[in-house]
Length: 413
Image 1: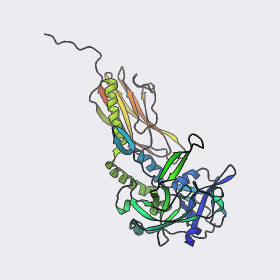
Image 2: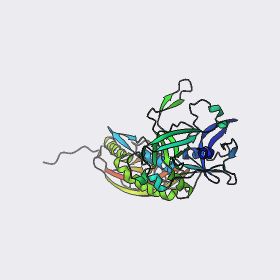
Image 3: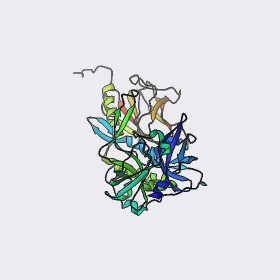
């Protein structure tokens, strides 16, 4: 256990002259420490505010951070999958996966100890009941928070409770990337190493089940999290961190996304529910019946490597004629919200039907636009978003015959 204790560091932040404990990290290679992506994302762009506290109390500057690309990608995607009851869609209640990151420091700094990862075979052989342990810096709701930056890490024990895939369901060993365990955790323990009886890292602690209460003694929006009595907590399997360290994360994520798509057939898709609502609104608003529809565009809105959000758009021409009602709906397939604008190609004027009061849509998972014209018009149907990661989409065009406003006439005798 001495090696474990000597390899674990506190992640701290200086806020208004006060040093606050924010998380945990552990050394695994010269100049590199492992933690959670939700920790590295908090540090990103604010490296000067954060620092590490070594086991001997020394402060270490942070030079940079890396987050697993799957962290933001899955965080967006999981919002598109859920369950539907009485026409209401509810997203799956999932822990966020791929929650691993790397903190980089000066590689010349001597590290007293580093931890080794379990092999792929050992990771895939993990089973419920396996004893596990962890050292970290839990501080949320605990005494001593004000002195945490001067305190040692704490050692905790537990067992693996279950092993699941990213959707928290049964899976083959290759895809059991989420470790459920009974090691106690709370805020500050994020990034702690989860080790097996041999001392090898099998996971990175990243969260737990909590019950949230409003704190009436604080502001109206203040909340308190209390750990669930079930003591089912979570860790990301260690091979996710290894893939990031070996620059294989992007490649493996592309393969995992195929698994997401295949597995998602077991759940309800947000877009399918949105289409039902879209067609129902057309019938109610325009008194139309059956529509023809086609996919008129598909692709990705990709801003490339950016540090902040960037406006990206793509336009598709569409010929519209009088006597028709046109409805456009887009599927934000990977969960990054998108919008739809429609313009007259000849004048660049924004077009909307009189019954659709919005001039432009907001960013949504299934944005819509409705258009009617009084003369033949070529439209530009524009899919757009403010993106920091690619927004995958499919654009659908629906066409209905508008009901006649003229009264019906009796047939001649």
